Image (cartoon, rainbow, N blue to C red; front, top):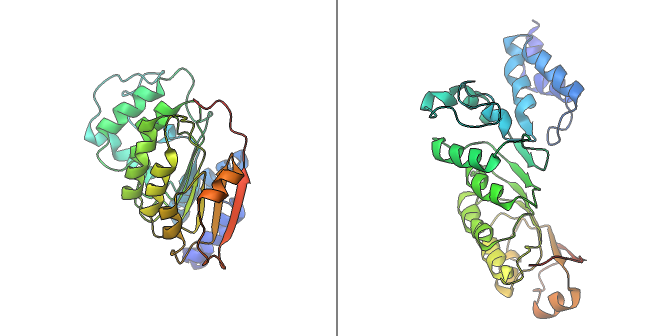
Length: 274
């Protein structure tokens, strides 16, 4: 092989030609091309595998790397999980940078909640230790989020979108998120669907625990949180997603130091609040 291909920057350019946007799910053609490249030679193998695993639309691809005698076809545990059962999976988990969890992320007929509980107990280290972006879109399945989320809160996480808060238990996860992921820069939290709880205090307390925010989208912030974010040197965009524009702007005073911050207020018609 020509020595040019031993230069990391050249390898990176080759991979960009195959898979230009590694923050999005690769097409079937891109996936096949990366897989073929990974099998070509040792020079291409590691970079191609990094790209191939960079974006994941499910965590079950990691579980499939475990020995075949652990899980039945419907993801029922056949035997206890041993420490060495993770060895092959750990070859790939550190490559995952972007994770999207949606209604298409989990196998049909699988008790995903039970699987997550088992993995949480048996996993010796962080599930995805290099994860940088997490998007959780499973609005109808909050219990799955509770079981899996603690495995995904790593110090490397920079971007997060959460749209699943429907109980006080889920809101309580924000305190863990701030503690485990202090370097978050981009945060998008949908309106919590909990009519009996003032979620603004919980979200505001979460925001006050972060000092590296660049973009923030939330429903409400109290005055303390506003006073905090206005001091953040990296903040560029603040979006308030509220069902009541008049109430939101009247009860919170934005400090004057907003010249370099784009502040957007969006109104939404939230329904089915419990």
